[in-house]
Image (cartoon, rainbow, N blue to C red; front, side):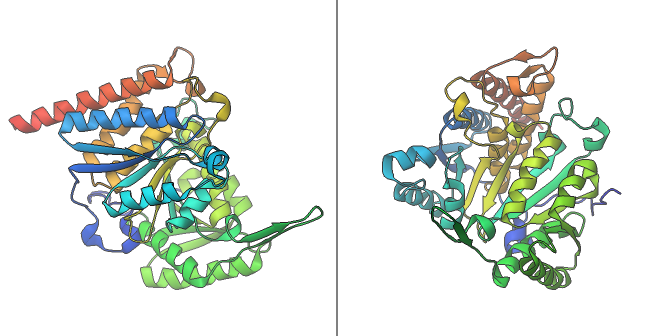
Length: 389
């Protein structure tokens, strides 16, 4: 069975419209002055963030946009060694300054509990991980090409509750972890997920574990029934184990998949199989009004690859494209970045993790330069054509 999406002829709306429900803001006016907070992160983070910034500079150069980049401090294990915390007060203040000034944060990978603490610090409760053909490589996918030819899934994850948050303590003989979900928190998340589904297929898949986690599962089902009636969508509840199987065996059966925190972590990484590689997966994390947003890859810091210029920057570049569209309303520029990555891949240039026979393996910075050149050329041609039309 394939999902049927609604109104294919209508202009698409921002995914983040689902957060506030105001369709008058569905086509955000493009921002010409971009403020970006760049956090290099650790491991391969500085390399892939530098690659993304090179591509964004090409966008600005070709279109006349003003791009102001401010760099944040250490995060993750590096910050913990320096300051004793994975998320320091300085980084929290830095991000608030960016958000308060209308900017967004592009963040490299950080180890330890950095991502979990950051999501709580800024109430980034809603995570969107796109699994779409425009961001994938079918020739390296382990599945048959026809299974992923029309890939278009959004995995949305509740970030601020569940097993990754809560209170824990340890002794030599035992570990105790207490966590919970509130009805208000679950409704907030599922309402946003339902609104996102309403702009696409009007059907939402909610992941639970009915018998294994009965109390929390009943809460999610009860809240979803209420939300479905209010938002006029249909829904199905699927156990996490079956969902993992079906996501790979029949991806065309799904549209928007809404998950609790831990289940979303698993499905986000598993979904990267549909794209072809974990190094090209990415996401955006949002507050309730959409004004606080952090964009990231879905892979880790890869400490063993740090400094070697072999990391794949595509996931971070795609996250930057998502930022252009969702935080700054720059649809054309975002599409140009996505197309540029695909063009470079099709021209036979790839990092070693996604290389196939006949490709030339290039370094992180080389791939970024090629993507930037494609972006500049494409947007430059479009700008010239518009000037003479």
